[in-house]
Length: 478
Image (tube, rainbow, N blue to C red; front, side, top):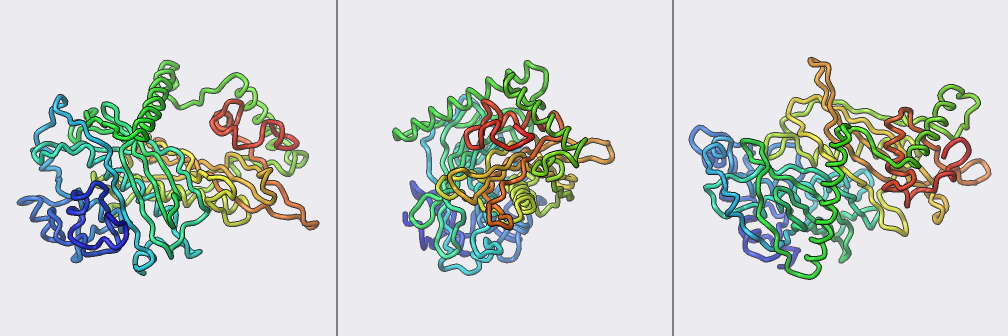
């Protein structure tokens, strides 16, 4: 099916009729006459005395601060209320299906839809990447939901929760609002109650983005693990991707067991003895900077001095299909806070692309617990490391971490809900003689921060290969 100009029929019909379904988000007639109804009809379709989780406007759109893509994807799934879930029969774990991967595509007709362009425009007249992150989460959730569907309207569907987002690779520093764009997703691997969704974004005939989302399935009423349909890879590429994801998930499971056996509950980073010594050197340099600021290297900066915070109460307009706060919204807020932090740190507008190499603007995101409507949530960002690119004069990279915490002042408690890592490329500033000034070297302020940095950039760290080797950061720091 052609990706552009798909404007006939309903979105439900398009999604179910083709091997490679497409949903053109710029065609408003796609959302008319859905089986679930719109506006007052949606409430009536939900059943006597029942109300849907969201409110629909007179045009049939879900009311809330969502992108057009998210609204249309959610409308395809809008048929379950709390009462219907409670009345539905549970699924028989022994009756799970075996399904092939199914590619689902969403089309962005930017070239012909001015209203759609306005929804996704940033101040520099390119695509607002943070909005794309929202849509990635929405489409990945839609793909996961479709795979879990057993075709029986009388059985209860699972509650699907985003667990992690692996590195989101962008091959360009910006996406154009003048050319159409297509987002695709398919199931890459399934376990007993979890699955990996492979996401891609195409524009101008080129693959611009790849991402990997992991979802876990829970029973919508009990919260217990929910057995999902198995995946049957079809092509050689499908089988290779399935085996790769199987190995990665086995390694993750083993790591969780080791963490649980250590008694730390996963709150502390576990690093090698060499990386621990590297972290101790960072702390020693930080102590000098803190205790003797007039004598310490002026190019050193404490991590806490790079931090920005944003605290707000989560509103109903930000909830997802299950009444919790939408994970894509949390990613958007974290990404844009990280962007602002990098902007203040580098003194120039950060970019999501690294010239000459595929970048990873989103390094890794973990979702530790759900965020509810009414929760007081605090986002705290900080620069963890920055360096000049040796093969690209005048260019540098800033790595940041954003931690989201739900705070309950009445209970004097605060619990981390999300940890998100981001990378941005920046232009280096010049001194009076025209020489490039290397980025300030960031030092951890606490032992926990030092171990986190060591786990990323120290000996054997996950990101050691992309940052300068220890000892090359300049005077006073490893």
